[in-house]
Every structure is written in structure tokens, then in C-alpha cells.
Image (cartoon, rainbow, N blue to C red; front, side, top):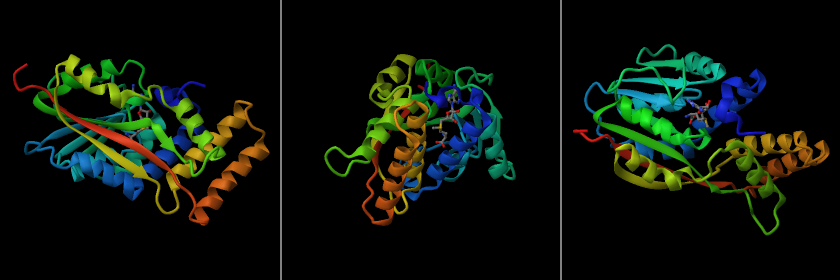
Length: 270
Ligand SMILES: C[S@@+](CC[C@H](N)C(=O)[O-])C[C@H]1O[C@@H](n2cnc3c(N)ncnc32)[C@H](O)[C@@H]1O
């Protein structure tokens, strides 16, 4: 099965709901909030700044554009109707926030509309990320800011010892759910080719904490996908899910992945 996030609006509703729940869980984890804070603060936006999130999912990161980056308004576009409905349900009361179904490669907005464009864990799912970067360049005002953050997916692990079977589930899920594992190692060149000036690049280590809620969703979805693909019998999948939960309750669970953020500017004179 190809990366379902790359065409989420076309997946069945149950899968979209399941992924939306996992994204909400991830958005709310303190360690994930800390990563977003680390690269969104100090973006130095002008007063009254208009921001856009491409691939806005459940809308939590779009709201960060107000709370952490200091934008005056923020809009999210996202192809999955389930995601857009969740974002509208969670944040529809805030008239500074709006969400629509749309495609990051072809947003339909006028050129030079936004002061800030954000892509948070979007580009790893998009075949042809150059097209999204070019659309962001078109949408930004001269001097506008592009903020990109994505996983450095080859670093994802749940391994606590040699030959740990749980780690195979993580590797399998990354292989199944990510289109380009290497996007944050390639992004600088893509940005320069599109005309951007590079700003700060930072690494962010994510270690699953407490109940490891998000990592457990990855393990559960991975075990079930292995059954669907005929790699495991369902009893074995259930045993691996139990192993992960037992590790959490015995304080033996370890989950880790690096994220990388890159800030860039559209030159003031293009
Ligand atoms: C991993 S989720 C991240 C959602 C949100 N940014 C967050 O961090 O919670 C990736 C999102 O990108 C969306 N996406 C994938 N391809 C897209 C495209 N071409 N245009 C806009 N969004 C896209 C998916 O539907 C999905 O909701």
C-alpha cells in the first residue's frame, strides 16, 4: 500500500478518522508542542501578519501560527474532508482561524498574499515536493517567511536491545507511511532552487514520554497493517501490541525520532 497520507482525501472514511485521531494525539503531546515552539517563536512577523498552513490536518498546528508565531490570522488547507471537519469542530469558534479543503500544489490564492507559510510534516508525504515549495514562494509576500518541519524518518526507533521485534514495526510503518524519508536532508537545495534565502536550521529530538500515546498509535497501526499485508497472523500482531503496552506500564518503553526544521525567506526584491 502506498503512503495513505499522500492521498488522504481518497482513503476510506474509517482510515481518515483513524489517522486524524493519531494526528490529534501527536499534536497534543508536550514534547511535540516543544518542537513546534522551538522553531515558530522568533519568526519576527509584521503586525497583522497573515499565515497559511499547507497540509493543516486537524488544525492544531494552524492554531500555533497565532499562539506561537504571532500571526493575526491563519488559514489551513488540507485535502481530507475528515481532517477539515475536525479542524472546524475544534477551532471554528475562533474567527482568526479558517480551514478549507485544498491542494498545497495549487491553492488558488492570489500571489503575494501571506507573510508566513508553514508546512509541518507535509512534504515527506508529497510526491514532487518542489511543486509545493514553488507554490509557497508564489504565495509569500516579498520578505515573507517559510517554515518547514518534518521528521528525519530514518532515525525513528523503538529499539531497546539487539534484535528487538518492536523496532521492526516502527521501520515497517515508516516504510509504509512516508513517501520521502530523506526530505529534510534534501530541502535546503530545493529551497535555494526555488529562489529562497536560507535561515535557521535546527534539529529536534523527540523522545516519547509518559504513556507514549503517539508511539503506541504507530505500533498499533503498524501491527494491523502487517496483518493486512499477510506478514503476521492476527495473534502475533496482538502480542506485539501487548508487548508495547507492557513496556509502557513497566517503564521500559523507548521511542525516539529526530525532527528537523528549516526557516527560509522570500527575498525582499525578487
Ligand atoms: C502527517 S499529517 C500533518 C498534519 C498537520 N500538519 C499536523 O502536523 O498535525 C500530513 C497532512 O498533509 C496532508 N496532505 C498530503 N498531501 C497534501 C497536499 N498535496 N496538499 C495539502 N495537504 C496534503 C495530509 O492529508 C495530512 O493531513
